[in-house]
Image (cartoon, rainbow, N blue to C red):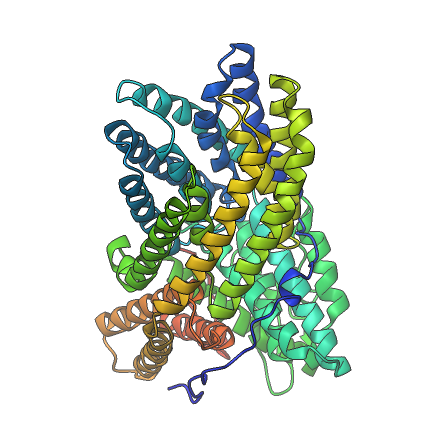
Length: 603
């Protein structure tokens, strides 16, 4: 059982200046920026050539799907992009049919709010990363207020689907050149974060807690990326898993870590060359030959390899590290074999999130209508974009959204005369805003919003130019209304059970790990008991990660115990390895027999 006590509730001041502080740009900021330009440009230019730029909003709905899944391995990215496109088409279909059947603004706002709630819940349950539900909500909400007939809907959906297929191809285009690019980037980020924490801890510098939290978050993200593909891992992915484990070791013992070596590994991983070795270069594959034959102890204080070489005490300690590393790798393989929970069971805990989203978006839209707005979906989308991990981050996002939109409308006022020079100028301005939004949003959300705001306003001019003053005034009012009402809804509708679910999931993993350890240590344990213990522990680990991810999308007054989550996963992986060893697939540490482990073998 875990001895750690539950994290107490915290009372924090709501920041203003700190929410606007710029961070470092993303290491791959140019990838989503270039992807969205490549996805938006061809359909828009083609429609411009045909003189039907008024249809560009529908193709842009599909093109914006290229923003998703840049952190996923390509095998997983293909599936995620496909589901995002289908989800976008589903929301767009509901919006188009609703717009065709009624022009009652209250009804349309209600439909938009319900769609936003569903999109938020599904994106959280499936862990679809940035931009998550925001783009889907923007597409469906905007379509609700475009005059439509039932006969036009199939054609508009077909345009969106065609652009979505093109976006899928754009997203998958780098795969032949860098088949393991996302996994390499995630591993490099974990190594760099571990190196930064090791330097901070060793030097006794301030900010050590923040560096440690950032490092654990990077390691957690790396495991998510590596485990996103559940089939048999390649040699490259296995090597990357070893490096992530070394980052975990550095977190556990920062005083013994070598930051320079960790950063050297990170630089090597980012390229397309061979994955660096993580152990003693005097021995092939850290004492583990490609066929799986490992080193074996040969007396106190010394170790003998299969080739007969004698190693010193330091080498023996390295052997112990390698055994632990191998243990966790086997545990990771066992966890990968467990199927994810059904979507329905993952949606259950997100009911409060859906209720909050529906309430906040609906009230924001109604308030905008009461003020005479012609485009209440701007307020609706503003409210939908606020919801973050806790009340402090929700407030920060509200501040960022308001500041970014206010600066953005000023940028639109400056860009509008250029965009109104002709269709080509309008398309080029839209492409520039798309690129700027994705290039800058990694530094701070408000900076990206500076480009998102003129982008949204320029899209409204695709069917025909409109008075700049009216667009600017409407956007400012809807931004303020959406931010205020959305934040009030976030405070009013809470989900206090999210923290307790994480605590219960940690307790479940601890109990399952203790049970599996007892079964593995008992010589009389039956094969069936070993299999049941292993599968129960693996399922508990998968559930812990899913529960922690769901809580990370919730605003509650407790800090998410991410460090405990990662430590529990690490310990569970090693216990899973013990259950596999007990079945005879691996020898006990310290035995003199060689072994061969075939990944994916099932007891």
